[in-house]
Image (cartoon, rainbow, N blue to C red; front, top):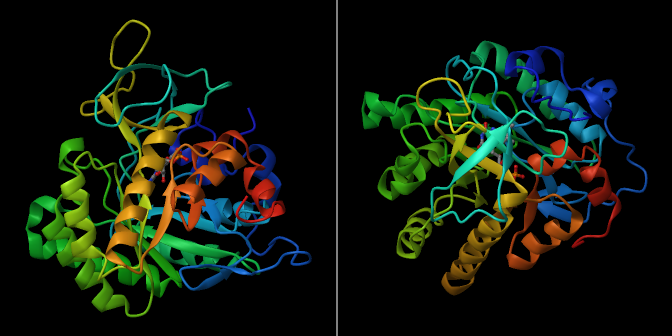
Amino acid sequence: MTWFYDPLRSYEDNYAHGPFGAWAADAVAGSPVQASSRDTDHTFLGRPVHRPFGIPAGPLVNAAFCAAAFAHGVDIAVYKTVRTRAHASHPFPNCLAVTTEGPLNPDRLDTLVAGSDLNRARSISNSFGVPSRDPDEWQPDMARAVAAAGPGQVLVGSFQGTGRGSGEDAYVADHVRAAELCVEAGAPILEMNLSCPNEGTGNLLCFDTALVARIAAAVKEAVGDVPVVLKLAHFASQPALEEFLAATAPIVDGYGAINTVPARLVDSTGAAALPGAGREIAGVCGEAILPAAIAMVRRIARWRSDAGADVSIIGVGGVMSLTDVAAHVAAGADAVMSATGAMVDPELGRRVADASWPV
Ligand SMILES: Cc1cc2nc3c(=O)[nH]c(=O)nc-3n(C[C@H](O)[C@H](O)[C@H](O)COP(=O)(O)O)c2cc1C
């Protein structure tokens, strides 16, 4: 297997020893791509980029991974979501190969067989629990990742709040602190993860419009001109999506859609595939969520056009090939990102970088 993030090793092993496979030799910050033959005619949230294509929050767990991504032609690298305090990962395994019969219907909770034979995997589970180092450790590391970007490349700092149960004021303040810590580390663009299944997949933060609007306003107030993107899950309800967009578009700079699609994961005997309580339902990403992701991008783009809103859309979900990149752009995405597809095919970013844009 040649994946740069190796799902057959623990998160901690990946963090300490990765990246692996084809990227193993490029994990040194400060070895960016050759600047020659790279135009920077495109922009991503006001920054010049060679191609508005990247890897979303997840597989790039630290600066070594981000530097390797930049060296392999990925022009937007999102540093995996950080918190204001250290938080342990769910136990190994985190990514299993998931078998689906065609695309997932995001409005339904499917039961899917998941296993560890990842050799031909096109869709995988994602069950990490959003681990984070302490800021004393991740801040200097994020600064190294920011510095690893070459010409026409940019690093995005992804963050989320911790402590939803400790009262709304404290939860808002924790988001603000996380955003400030990313800005202190030099992140020129921020992404706020609202789609982590912290408290059950039906209770994602992105489905609480009033609270998100309050948090987003406080974060924007604190970070000034630094662009802020909201990372969303699939919305089943069109009125809820429209209400969310109307409330937040005047505050933030863009949306990333989508995060993973939840499913109940079982092994070949029907038992829970992932060990530990609360992990029966996990997020699925990769090929099986492409139509769900494209549909969300299209719905946001249609709303943007109707409302005349000035927000960027990052299309995420199921991008395994240049054709899939083009499908996200056709649906209305200004930038496109691939997590599973880039893990399976570590030269996907290079191929997008070498192609014209839109592909
Ligand atoms: C290994 C892995 C870890 C992830 N961790 C995060 C995370 O920390 N924060 C986040 O917002 N999304 C995370 N995601 C979700 C991705 O950003 C993305 O939304 C999702 O995987 C769908 O894209 P894909 O089909 O290209 O994989 C993770 C995905 C993977 C595969």
